[in-house]
Length: 357
Ligand code: IPM
Ligand code: MG
Image (cartoon, rainbow, N blue to C red):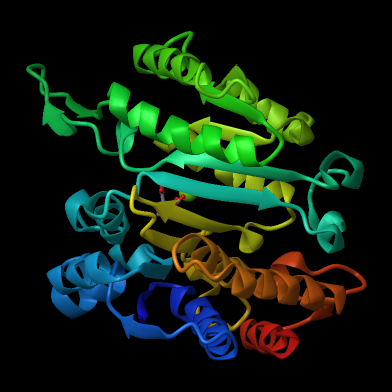
């Protein structure tokens, strides 16, 4: 039976990096006889320009039917003046919530070849292998009420609501405990339980879950401390579980530990393991169209897609090995360039991965 993959290139560098990842996916599709069908749709600013909205119904329908989705990136200055509900980012958030992709896995792994690309000392980051499990469909990103209002004194006020229900915390907690069990058995839950009630509940539910996972060692950390510990001694972490906004921030921080945010893939999964895969970086409008973006985060997202949604572990490993091999060859896009590296374009990097496959 065939499985279907929906490509959503989006904006900025999105189309350039998805083009390279697409070639890689088609190649393993042939080599490993995966029987994949491909389709493409519009999202974000590209969709706004073509249809007036960031998430056309056709895109959401196609996404619902797909076994897996590969998304490039959304957003850019061209659309920044639009009101919140019409911004490109709403396309991404609408896909996450529409498909209930609540579990966001963001691995931060340092490739040994890139130890010198990190802004931290090699001994602090070498061997780094962290998994951030970010809740993706709740918290302050989606809480109601939200908006902007005018107070009686005429002053404007902006407001958002930070809420989590028990079931939302429990289901992301389970994903994190399961992941920790399959790794080194260490889970750190990040909250702000010294100030925010919603995260007091978060902590309680994590403690309740811990009883079902005696083999996992659970610890708790306030988010400000976690941000500091990530740059002080990042290797103390194995799996981190946290809410939507803290996860957004900490995953960018963790990305830089690995040398470049251009190296970090991610998976957003629902309870049926249907998934949307995307690089952790954004649309990088400042370098779009120049052919210098790093396609490796998107290519590694394809590997995650093969592993989690398409059940093609062998193909996933082949892609990861190919990425490692191009780094061994010294090929570097601008973001990971080092003195002894050979600078390549987005396309050359993609071609090199294809060749290594
Ligand atoms: C991410 C991005 C998104 C987020 C933006 C583009 C809405 O920063 O995936 O981390 O905040 O979740
Ligand atoms: Mg982010």
